[in-house]
Length: 360
Image (cartoon, rainbow, N blue to C red; front, top):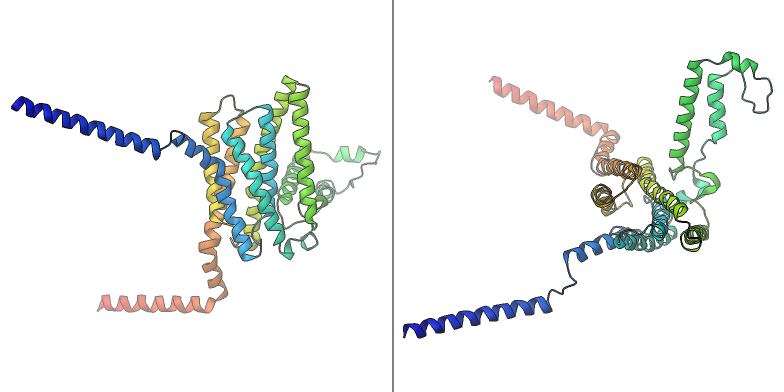
């Protein structure tokens, strides 16, 4: 009897094991497909992140009926950088996930540009922007500062007085100021509140934006295909590929500059969504991690561009925190000094009364 009982228990246990295995196999079969892996989820999150980060900005601009506080230069930077990244893939193929992300970025940036142009404020029109000094004017001012006795004249044939007045101190000071002038002009180009040369990306006619993107994208892909696929110049195409990749990363690293200028001018974060900043910082971490750990034979300059962009994004994060949480209260206190002084008087009275109580 006891042997029969053991046989029955073993059979029941085996049946339960078979049933549980069958149940879990059915769960795996019907609820967890084989293609739904962690890598699949991660790749799609990376690819479609631009839809979430910039899609919320599209909805916010459409809801508020104004693009005040949002820089159109963000669209220009991301569109140009993404087009360069796609053309770079034609020469040097990289991870398909990153290619898909670039294509998604182009699509969402086109939508964002359309919405931002539709609700562009009057202050952003070209005629309402502030003029900036020309490069020749700045160079002439620097020249007159260091060589006042020798007016700047390119066509002059008498250079003897100038050569006699030269000194190492003047030359070093002049060179230093020239570098500052170049940096100044470079930064002013990315400040959307100042007029640019030929009004680049500040056109009043919306059609000019689409013409530029069409011409730039067509020329870029045409030249890339001709070099890499038609003529099959391997050595030259690799050099062009490195140039395109470096240029794309450099342009993308300048992405925060226009937004930094807008924050500084408006003293507000209106029109700028926090999710964009979060996506920028997360993108920086992913990019630097990929360059350090995932990629091989990567130039140091790529890493420098990534670190430079991350430093600018961190600066924007500090700006965002300051203008959203600290600046409004500071501005309120400055505009109402009487309230501030009354608060200080009350605090002093409370402190003096507390001291009297302690003495007594």
